[in-house]
Length: 287
Image: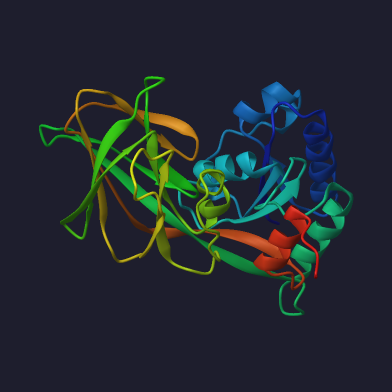
């Protein structure tokens, strides 16, 4: 018997229906399906609530869009639990399974991988740590997509000094700076005109947001190159992790990013590669 954690989008009625469908299939096949109260209560499926750690699951089923996948990774807290993404979102770069094949996908998963029914896609995570101007530790977070240092005041830029491997690189005058993983290259960084990176890479992507300077290019760095960002000047900024505010920053505060020892595991069915997913999402043609 496997223990399967269900994580679902709170504002999509279809997510509740699919959570019920998945739970029924799993129970019928001898497995244990459950949800946290945070998910079950808004969806009206309180009978699925179980008081246990998400990291104890053998498999996680994420029912929603990319935001739900991000939340699932956060819930797991770095535990090596495979995640199957059911797409009831919009673009859905991270979710692969369409709702109509949910049960078929579960059947393929439990059939085993020896026959090529599925494979695990490893995704790099970032450890993001913040230090106050007085040297005190302000917090540590793990990101699947990105950490972002961004202005708080409308109509103004912030000044961000960047160090690479302990050596000053430059000072950005911009709305913010995105520190992204290859997975995150198709998220906020993409909307800021950053490059698209294959998720097979281990790299750190620096993309300025609306830079007010001549140098406005992204940097793609090797994952071993330590990146630090210091907030200069009197204007405050916010550190966000995967789209969620994490810390208010003032002059002299620093953020450092480095690859995490943990990785996220996404279940992939078939042989469709990243560039094929990208092509489908953007509606690209062969010619």
